[in-house]
Structure formats: C-alpha cells, structure tokens
Length: 259
Picture 1 (cartoon, one colour):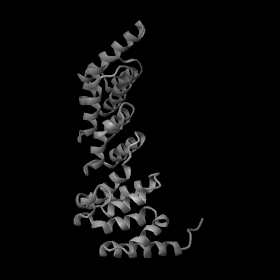
Picture 2 (spheres, one colour):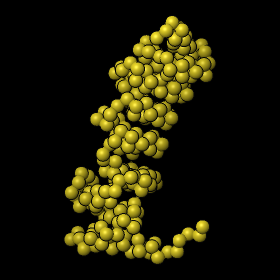
Picture 3 (cartoon, helix red, strand yellow):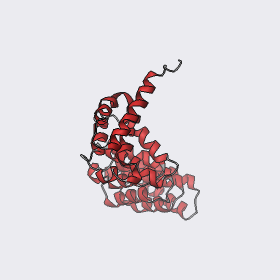
C-alpha cells in the first residue's frame, strides 16, 4: 500500500470512528466505509466490526461489504466471526443481514455455510433474508437445496399460520433447476431419504402433503410418479395421489390463457 492510500485509509477510519461517536454525520462514515472497501487493510478491521455492531443501518451495510473485501486481501477470522454474527442477529435490519450473506458467500465454501442453513431453517427468518440465504447456498453449490425447501414446507405449517413460508417453499421448489427434485420429494415421502421423521409427522401433514406438493411443483412431470403412488400400500399416499392426479388432469383440460 502506498503512502497516499495509507493516508486515505487512516482518514476514513477516523471518520467512521467520529461518526460512531456522533461527531460526524453518518453519510460521511458511509462514504468512508466504501473507501475502505477498496483500500482497507487489517488495521481497519476493529473499527469496521464496531460499525457493523453499532452504526446506523446504511453504515452497517457498507461495513459488512468492506469487511468482506478486506478479508479477500488479508484473511482474518475476526471478519468471518463478525459477518456470521450479523447474519444470525435477529434484531439486525434485513438489509444488513443480506449484506452479511453477500459478503460471506464470497469468502467461504459450503462446509462453512452453517449460518446460512440456520437462517434457512428458522421460521423466524424474514422472507428477504431467507431468500438471500437460499441464493447463497445455491451459489456455493450446496447439494441439498430441495431437502431444505421440503423441510421448510413441512415445518412451516405449525409456526406460520398465514402459510407464507409454505408458499415461499413451493415457489422456490418450482424455480429449482434440478431434474431430480420430484424424485427427491417422492423418496422423502417414502422414507428413503432424510427428513423421514418430519415427513410422517401429523403436524406436517404426513406423506400425503408431499404427494400434493409434487403436483404443485411440477404438474406435468409429476404424473408418472403420481400414477405409481396411486397404487401405494399406504392409504394416505394412495388417496393423495388420486386427488393430485385429478387436479393435474383438470388443469390440463383447461383452455390456455388468452394472450
């Protein structure tokens, strides 16, 4: 780092510190954090971590992104701890938690994505944060996206009376680019994959709920599996498959929407 950048770095850090002490307007601190995103080094980590904890929301967002950028130049476990902590802090603004996810995804691999999974599994996670965590997991190549969405669908019923989590899970399952997603849901319903104890839980709707879910996720592609399940030895699965097939055929017979 040249002398000019060192001077700019020091001035930006002092500006953030002064803003946290209410001696400078927060807008100047936000600009300073953006500078540190480009030129900051290890010396800036404590002041940026403090800004992430105590600053106004716009400064917290920029601090998270600046910390992530610094970690790429100067790896520092304090940065990872700060970003994971901000993500898991349920009282943090949604935009701050999303910025923490954005930063983390550039720094970690899927083996260290536990905080993203925790957000995805929590029924208290705001939808925007939940969706950001899912995007992050996809970007990291997480292999069990379908399973986690099915989990959200199954457990959303009990703690989300309005059904928003379940609706979100269905939308995301429809969007998942995985040719085996229906087979995975089929196997969960039959206890041949993870989530067996959750899939058969009465409060989750039992395996019949997953049969109906398959028809919602991909009506056309689900027909083959639904026909197979219509002869299942489990009466709940059998009845749900018959109901789902009737629904799918009814939709197929409807005229296409007018252009």
